[in-house]
Image (cartoon, rainbow, N blue to C red; front, side, top):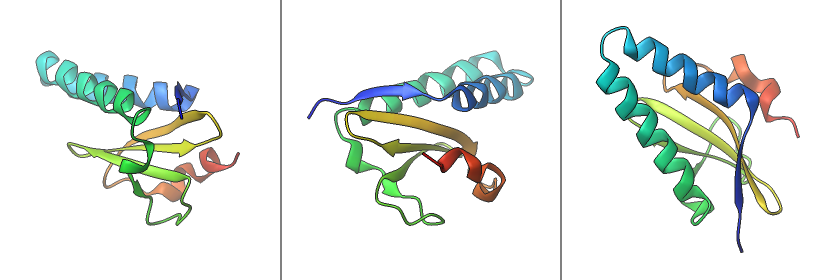
Length: 102
């Protein structure tokens, strides 16, 4: 089945914030991290089940891929993969729980 990857507005903001934060110390590493996140997001459309089920949620449709110290959280829908969030691994998901509602 062919999936289309769609980014939520909040996830785009997450990427921008990550890039800005890392760029304070290194533009090079900021680009490298964002590039890797985007690369992983493109691979999800071919292998959506490769990500693990988000342990705090326990829903088979909400999964994540770990990229460096970040969690790329996505929801598998009928023909779409919705990127919900890109957050630091130590950040609590309960702070962004409203994003997981369909």
